[in-house]
Length: 247
Image 1: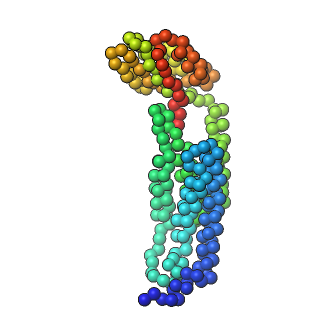
Image 2 (image 1 turned 120 degrees about the horizontal axis):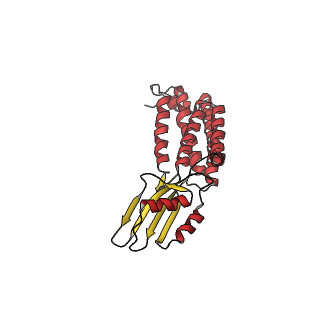
Image 3 (image 1 turned 180 degrees about the horizontal axis):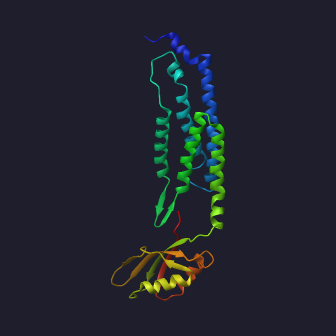
């Protein structure tokens, strides 16, 4: 038979105080998650403010309740065993990892969603920090994550780098190109063929080459419109497709 006093213990003053603490933790985690998610939402990503807010808040919920085991099930109710908070964190990290994997998309040589997946994983860490009471660390991680996503690409663009492009070239009927010839085309635009990236598809009449070209340097590499103009001027090229091989 259920003890009537045990039922009322769910609404006792200490229990309500604990619920208020949990609620404030959830509210804070939600606010921090929304800050991180706004950057993704502003740039039109699939995972936006709602996704980040929910992940961060749920991570905090699954962590903060582990800190009040004496109030579980009304406190004086059923006897329960102690819970290891680190196991809760492991479950959160694993679950959010699956969510992040669903955000990564691959189309040809282009991979998108890596930054969003990484940042949503960081959002879960923010929620965990809020849940265990490391509020300053949670705020700092929020600011660092948002700043990195907003300005990290600008810093990257100022550093020396060698970007790559994906090239698909469909040659005119009867034309059989050589690797040296294609490498010469790439060199004229400031690129070199990436080793092992060439794929050749064809039949008795037509041949299509797919490969990755890596810039020799940022200053020497021609932009995509210029490369398109150079390829369009060649009679042996029937059609082509260019895109940045980015992630």
